Image (tube, rainbow, N blue to C red; front, side, top):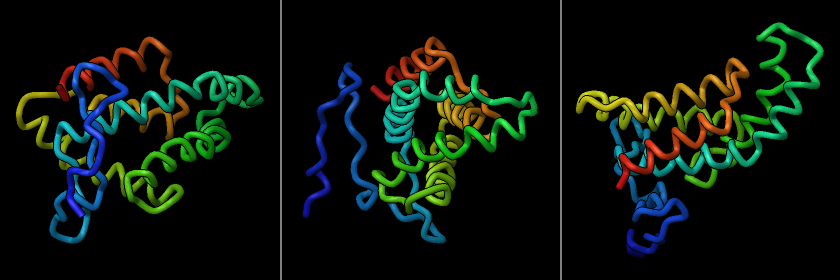
Length: 157
């Protein structure tokens, strides 16, 4: 089957294509699949939009928390954020659940390093935003999420 069976139409506009299935990506030494910089930007824009769609739900969970301790709040919010990220990475071909999300982030690191070597920071900033949401319950605002999507989409075009 051809690697070109994935859709090149984009829900993001401006000609940003959907990333190809994980199976079509290059296998790196050690078996970890890697994203190219444009693939990573498309993927992260998609997951940030999914996070934005669930923002009201996440904010409600955070508001219901009866603790001010970041570690305890993280334990309350992390399962829901991990479900969002894990579902996305499962669609990308990674295992289901927290392990899949962790493996997905690891796979993105090669593209982050490449972009940084080329003088860019969009991917590193996006990954940091997602890790902050997941690990520190630092749920970004709608404006922050939209701003990051705009940066990623512009850089992937």
